[in-house]
Structures are given as structure tokens and as C-alpha cells.
Length: 189
Image (cartoon, rainbow, N blue to C red):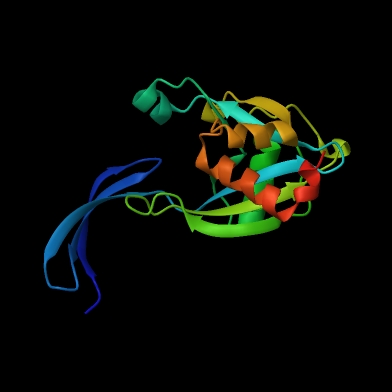
């Protein structure tokens, strides 16, 4: 017998929903588990293959600040899907957060960000851009209180940061490492 969710109880319903699920396991034992539920998300690493730079966003993250006193994180553009197509979501996030228009997207994977507690599945993309694709300053949406600082960082610097363990946002680290594996010529001297 496969595990069965016997019922759920909503603890909070806002930007995310927090549930307690009552589950019967394969052996017949019953457990309760908390679930954070907010739906699908996307993350994209915009990179300029000619100038060998990438666009990243730096912003305040309340959870990281609460847990470790970290005032901001350097991250790839990312966010929850408002649309049914993850590619549209990746383009929207890149436009809002770092002010770039993306055309070609290279899908990396769709993965679980925190499967032990969250329902979030995230589509990950690499996306080339050129200087002419920059259309604004970025910075996020004021109505969402996103105060984003945009950084254009040399790919060699990002590689060195990943090697030194300085990229602490896992979606960013994974996309930088994937870019290094799929397009090593961008990192050649």
C-alpha cells in the first residue's frame, strides 16, 4: 500500500499556506507532517556570452536575516509563477528584477527546492542576453517591497566565488555550476 494523506488542516493561508497533513504510511503507521504550500517557481541566470558577465539581484531576505543575521543575499532572478508557462515566468522575473529582456532560455531542470517541507517545484534556466537587451534598471516591484540592487558580475568572478563557497543561495550556485559545465568556453582564460 502506498502512503495516503488522510486529511489536512490549514494553519495559515496567506502568501503561502501552512498545513498539517495526517498521513498513513505503507506499514499502516500514522504520522503528522507540516507542509508549506505556495506553488511553482522559476529561477534564471541571465549571462552575456560576449562580455562574459551575468546579472544577479541582491536583496533582503527575512528568513536568512532571522536565521543567521544575513542582511542580503546575492541571487539569480527568481520568483513564484503568476502564469502557466514557466518560461514566461522566468522572462518576467528577469525583466522585473534585473531589467533585461530574455529571448532564448535553456532549461536546466525542474526540481524540488525543499522536499522535506515545501511543495515548491522550481524550473531552472540559463539565458543568454546582450547589452542591447537591457531595458531598465530592474530593482523589483515597489508594491512587493522588493528593494533589489542589480549586479553585473564577471563569470570568472562568479566561478571563483563558487569555488570559495561564497555563493550561499543554492539556486544561484546550481545555475552557475551548470553554466560552467554546459558552457566551459565562457570561463576559459
